[in-house]
Amino acid sequence: MNKLSVSIAAALLTFAAGGAVAQTAAPNDAQIAAIVVAANNVDVDAGKLAESKAHNKEVKAFAKRMVTDHTGVNKQAVALVTKLKVTPEENDTSKSLKEGGAQTISKLKGLKGAAFDKAYVDNEVTYHQTVLDAIDKTLLPNAKNPELKALIEKVRPAFDEHLQHAKQIQASLK
Image 1 (cartoon, one colour):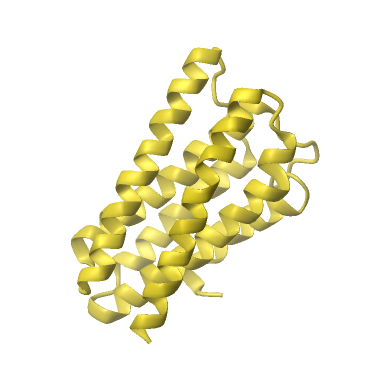
Image 2 (cartoon, rainbow, N blue to C red; image 1 turned 45 degrees about the horizontal axis):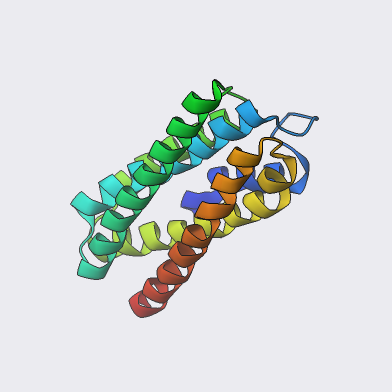
């Protein structure tokens, strides 16, 4: 696993394996909403940085797509929680995601050219796989509200598509 992904991946893997980081109970819908928003924001932030720093045109285009797609998911999530009158509840996992995302951005900012491109894409592969694992093992099984569960199910294929696209770019960069 790439060093840039370790803290984010650790948070999500721990979460997917049996509950949120340092939380013993399964997450409730308000906590799931906060996790969804945090996970998307982390990828939006990394994508914005990659849009400006990436050297490879394909990496730049991928970064732009991550910003667009994950911003769109967050808009849907915010609209849904507003409609449901649910306030996203910060929790150890959402906080850990934000901290890991900030660490990743900091590390990426220190890289340039092909090294940046490789690190960004490697992070995207690990990140999307880890998010998919969290969706499948924790978010979907624990979401109680049918509309929240439906939103997560609706966006899951996009995360998988992002993973496959990132793997394709990763292979082309080697």
